[in-house]
Length: 158
Image (cartoon, rainbow, N blue to C red; front, side, top):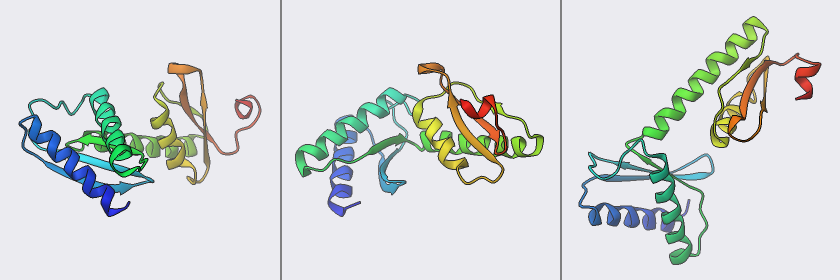
């Protein structure tokens, strides 16, 4: 990430917190090909669980970068590390399930989840020995299946 992008995001989010009358800290770092912005503080007007709010903030910040710097950046906005913590729990669960699949030699189908969560699991388990992953279902019912690597037949056709 270029320093000018980092500085622009720090100014943008610091200004936003000031306009909202909130006190807090802004962290900006590069993470897995994207820019991760974490707003830290005891906020009255920013609910850390509100996924739509975080997505909207990312869109606004992205638009700001496009207009001011002519830069297109893949952004993720988090509040008090809520999303990062959720991702870590999801990855820990996926790794534990992959271990179980490898030991029991039977597939496990996870609950429906959004594309970014499915992708996270697929990437995390891509090099996990003895298992493979694929997605099944359509639309909002799409889910990840963790299967033994040697599975074949109808399972492999999915």
